[in-house]
Amino acid sequence: MGIIPSSGVFSNSIRGWSLTIGKWVKKWSVPRSDGVGVWVVSLSDYQVWGCSCPVWKFHRQECKHILLIKNTPAAQQAGKIEYRPASPGNVGEVSIKGGVVLYPLVPFGSGPDLPATIIFDLIRAQVQPDEVSDYKRKFFRDTALRDIIAHVKIHGRFVYTEFQKDQGWVKPQLVSCDLPVKTI
Ligand SMILES: [Zn+2]
Image (cartoon, rainbow, N blue to C red; front, top):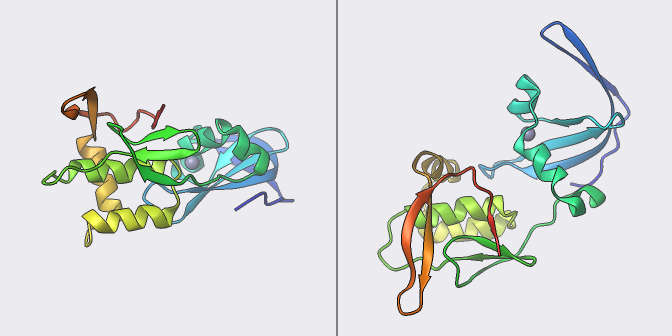
């Protein structure tokens, strides 16, 4: 991780068009959402952004990894992403509060949707991969992380939408995976 200066001039051909991007001058490692390895986001001296993921590589579209770096000024300056610590909190879904990631308690007898959603969101909230693995092991000992992610992507994210004084968090809903992690 960190800024890796690159000296090569990068040019590429897209459907017959030649595009000169310039020299990659900054690079960042972004953890893959499946938890396996990283994508490398790059910025060129012409201020063109690139990524090693298929969305950018094959479609030249601004992917979520580029957006993540663009939207994280601290990461841009340092050229790296800081991981956030996580702890249980009184929240209806994984929420970023200050520099900390809070996650809901899983009631006894819950199905797989809530813990799977929490794992999905902990990764998106840039929680240390080791911490995510420890959490995952508690609920899904023998299930691969990529299968948990796939489950959430297919079924949606399981979140509680309302807090009631006497009952705690209620009104669970399955919501889109595309919504950003909640900030409170
Ligand atoms: Zn990407």
